[in-house]
Length: 480
Image 1: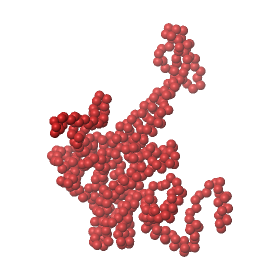
Image 2: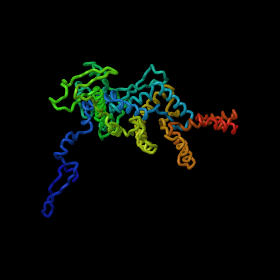
Image 3: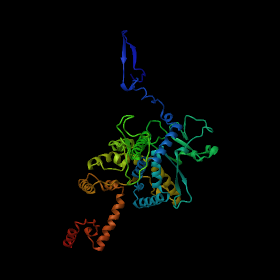
Image 4: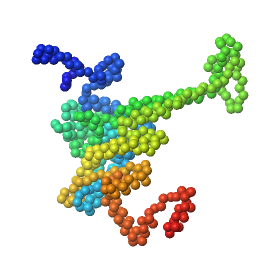
């Protein structure tokens, strides 16, 4: 079959016979039942499908949901906090240990000065709702740091090429100029945000070389050069969730607003008293009321929320979180329906997704920042590249707390005893540098020996329960 576009073709053989080749796939058939479902399927390229107008609409709608939907805002915040946390920690891997510690300390001080963790979290939130995040590297003379490198975050709307000034070219994709091999050469940054109301002045832009711009987005298709919101598949579901919740509230309010409903079983013109339809009467507290003859009071039975209300919201929220590889209990911030095993199983997929994102963040954002920082640090300190400032390094992220610390400690002890892990790997699970931790532990041990304290005496004691206070006191006296 190969690339042949038809489902049936004829081929004449060498002996003159004609063979009919039938190749059918159910998903390739179009009929009355599925015609409307596949109506919007197209063959556009990645850049054509995500053209500037489409991306603008998706950004606006995604931002609207994140701004007005509590679940959307919580999911985006949680994702940023889990991916970035308190920020990455740098560990240099050169052979000069003292130089490594000096570089690590200097980079940590600079990261605090520019609020690198906060900017990374903002970039992750922008990628979730806008589809991409941009940062421009520049020199900030007002920065309280010897290294004046700084990051300026740019919204995706501001990276664009005004069509009124430059005719679109094959190597230009909405504000980004590429070379023949697909490498970015320069970015066109509008001097004012399109939504700032600058009028004609909003068309003014500046050309920024690619080495000064960081562009972080997820590539879903080959050839894709601008990002789409991570929340894209879930945007209609957020609308369903909000509309259903409002409909349930309105139905419940409508039923509650009618205190008493008068009804009669008598036929029209029967022996029931004449009452004007839809007549209203106010009630005062502790009032005795006599109903008209033939009429009986009743109350409207509230049908909302229905018993399936929680189930519906759970299923919708679970479907929303799936496109982010996020388990339901994290998206809903509710683990009431989980047990220990299911919670651990769901989190394994989520934590693996987080590690993949952190690795991508290191390659696209952090390594670029570190290269620029090292280049300026070398110039500021008057050093040369032979002075030990090599680029060999690794990044540490915040560790994830175990649900059962006692079980994790036991497993860790067994792994170390069986030589199936290393101290470096175990400390890395907690987001810590093993060399730093061991040096700190050596200081503590030396001080305990100097003071004549044992490890048991120096260790902090866990608070005892009220029922166990007497037993703990007896154990302490026995140990003394």
